[in-house]
Amino acid sequence: MSKEETLNRVRELGLLAVIRGPSQGLTLKMVDALVEGGVHGIEITYSTPDATQVVCSLNKKYGQKILLGMGTLTKAAQVEEAKAIGANFIVSPHFETELAGAMVSSGLGVMIGAFTPSEVVQAYRNGSDVIKIFPGSLGGPAYIKALRGPFPEIPMMPTGGVSPENLREWFAAGAVAVGAGSKLCPWDWARAGRFQDISMRASEFVKAVEEARR
Image 1: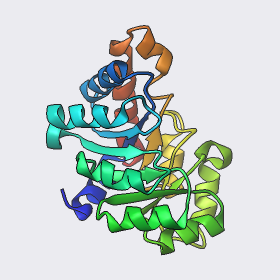
Image 2 (image 1 turned 135 degrees about the vertical axis):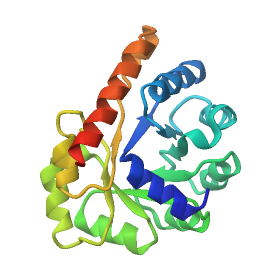
Image 3 (image 1 turned 90 degrees about the vertical axis):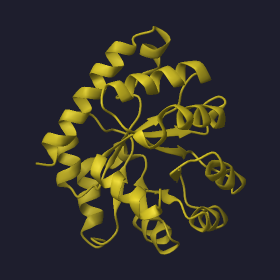
Image 4 (image 1 turned 45 degrees about the horizontal axis):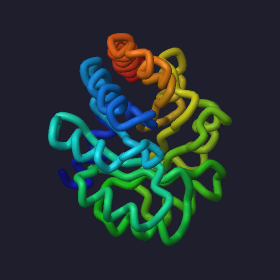
């Protein structure tokens, strides 16, 4: 999948599940439950145990059915690793010049984390395709709206503080997509084997995204 196709699909889906799973096995089950519920944008973070093995397994099982990326990249060496195992996009929680350069050079879809106006501009000028506004919970939709005032050309995706109840506010503020973690796929539900509940929550999120963008 080309970078353009990846970014178009991010916009089309409007929702990325940000997964920090408790174990390799549970993470795979979490993703299965999410896909069953209609969530097809999946970000596996490097903070997940055996994250690369998880991505390899998901690629083998789902292929192009899902949009699969890796997040919480903090080292340049992780960029080539993520690309080699088939990630379509890569996400960092912060801006760092060396890391940003490696991410952009990969040819994958790039989302660099930023929060302040200066960080947002710096990340965008260094080649980030979408700016991950993190943590989104600190500023809320009003903060995205404020940033979009001086920077209407910069695509922004909040991660953190996203729920079905406030999705309409995020998109109304100008977000191109949203990233959702624990509110979409709670760890305690996975540990308790509540995968059907995760599927139902996923369906609620997907429906809320569709309604928010009408």
